Image (cartoon, rainbow, N blue to C red):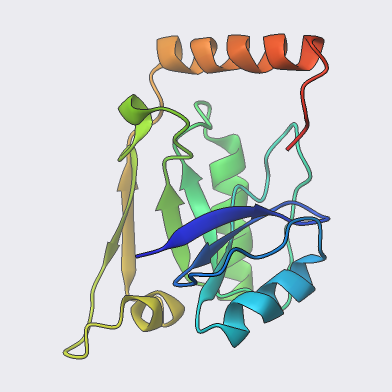
Length: 157
């Protein structure tokens, strides 16, 4: 299934089921509209990220990432789950993988109907989440690369 993480003006959104790349830098609402018009779904990713824009309440999103394997202490995941529960939104998990070894640490198990429509199943909340946190050694390596990039004046995401 095609999917991409998009940088909006207020944080990151996952766009699933679209083949056309949503433009970055637009408002979350514009991005959601773009994705929906192309038959996809929008998921708020890492809504309580401590070092980036955080998106808590985005009207029109289809689901919220409530388990992100990169949050090794779990507090941001706790708050994301709490927010999604209060808003009655479906919950998904993600690896936030920036390397091959991190792929699959966050898992969303989708129960699909006879029609096989994964996107509809996510919208309806027919999902379970599972996962493991990123190992501390891998997390520290990623943080080291992030710090080096910032010190060199690298582009912010």
